[in-house]
Image (cartoon, rainbow, N blue to C red; front, side, top):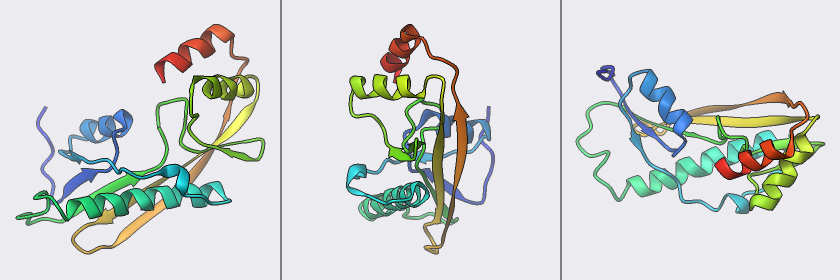
Length: 166
């Protein structure tokens, strides 16, 4: 399948297979760059502020890396950088609000198992953000969304399999 002709270049600031699949299905060509940031060092009280700050920090880190590459040289069209903060297809989202507490990606399998057991028969809010930055002009626009996720009871064998694939 041929890529769509576009009047802009896209840099996807994520290694997320779901985001890559979305752009590929839309037939866009894109370059992948990831941000090497310490997400745990970025703290905000409100989940929407946290995911927004994380997407912005990823964009800043990638823009700093781009200054030391040839990716933007000799590019005649605008270049868009897309950064986000939510794992769209994994169970372990970047930011989940559970019983009023922000939960980020679990640190290990035990914590992942504990999180999923807690969700069993309950619900949580998933919060995510996207930021699009025009690297030529420096302008950026982003936003956040939240969705309530309701869970049936999750059997232990399902929890074990989910922990292994994530």
